[in-house]
Image: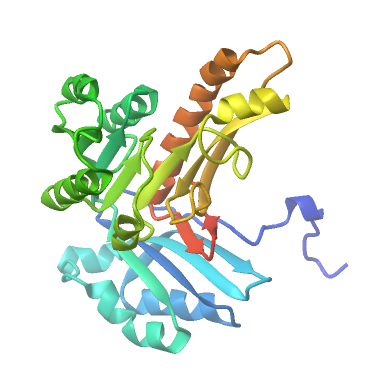
Length: 316
């Protein structure tokens, strides 16, 4: 033996790894850096060296190489070096400017955000309240790093739940006007509230392509089935008729293809032949809440990379 420690393969360091410094996060302002690029030797070394030159201390690093597509994904959380921060704080856009040359060299797609940033989101709902209320409660308890700008629903009774959390509520009538006019009203509300992310918390209307194109990768839906099974309406009834032994829910990005956007998170629960469609709906609501809550938090923390019609998701 050469003196190195051998570990069984199941104990060896995985391709996607998390590295922590001995510094407690939260002592100074921190940033998330999400990067992707064509895979090549030396990407991690170059990015890490560049961050060191910029005076950054890496708090967390995760990476994944997609061997099929030849693409590489990285997510960092960094803060300013402690000694340097005692002298002066980084000016605005310090990291963006410092990574410009490397971005060009490595063909990087790059997102940088402060851990203190709170995107403004809108929640859209119809009649079912369980997902709406769950997201509002997660937000109120501090679990979701965002500001909820408004709740929009096509049934006025949903305003009661928004009122519990002092969130502005807007009722948009989808019956007294055409759907085109109704969605024009929704679009104006999103713009008026400065919304950067729209969450469909059991909103049972099909989003028009123009609105999807205006907000690519910024509309998230919860579908009440384990996709790709049971796309479209009444998935619990479809599941009952098929006699499945597992049901689930899927949090995904909205695309022009109904219920076929990139998947962020999924949750399942076991069912049996004794369960009625009502039982499936009751059990499924638990899956819906969990999948949407986790998926939304993963998106807000910049842990999700859309790659074609798939995602790379770095766990927290």
